[in-house]
Amino acid sequence: MLEAITNAEYVLEGTAGELLAVHRLDSGKVLVVAYREVDVQDGFVITAFVTSRVAAIFKRRRQVWPPSN
Image (spheres, rainbow, N blue to C red):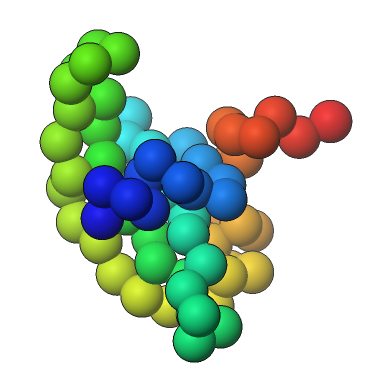
């Protein structure tokens, strides 16, 4: 999960201040890790799940990283 956060393809904004790291897996699915940053050096994982419904996640969330133009 930490690798998914560190090497996230996208980071989306959650509904309650959390962030969602989206990391593609070899299976064609994505690992989504919900986490919260306390500061630059500290944070914690809330939950994680694997899904193939990537479009549904992007439809409801704002992209934080990389910045969309």
